[in-house]
Length: 246
Image (tube, rainbow, N blue to C red; front, side, top):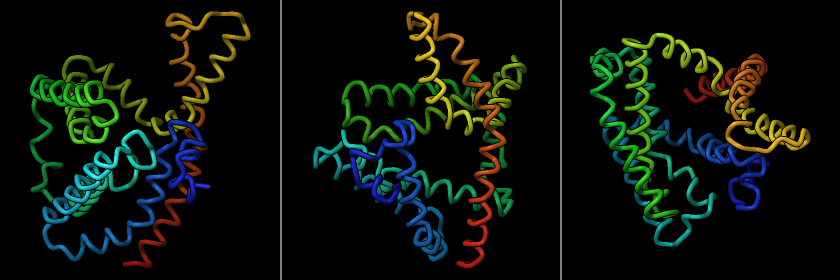
């Protein structure tokens, strides 16, 4: 189903609105061998990243020029996020090679929360400005400020929890241990929860929705073992595939 989902606006969200990314993942699986060989052929990671960014920017401009920004099959095509995928490949490679010169292992993370907070608010503000001011067009171009904003705010919260609120840090780390499973089930849990409220004759509002967070966390934690076993099957196949292409 995913193979035609990625080309059909009608079916791209057929697994659920929050599962639109399945289409993009399938596309990246298809082009990964090419990207892997291209990265190995280009001796400089900066050239690889520059080429990926240029490809994404060209796609953004094409989608904007064609007026297709409101269609998921266009604004979520793999070229939209190619620059991020390439960045992930480079960082993973440097981390695996234990590159001590990499900012992943350097002093980039050691500053206090107040250093990262302004950058997080600034870039998140740009993301909101693009989205609210320019609508669908803004969503085409907001990926870079979104990544920078979310990253800086995440580091700020982590450093804040590390220095002042250790319980906050432990809470986020606990959620992080099953966050993917939580993402997979939270919409289903929300739909069931809202239907239960309707069945009980309870109005759906902010107050009645408060317990949903606890219910969703519980469901995500219970689903985590199932999710791990499922993903382990794909990891084994992916490992065998990498061995073949290497």
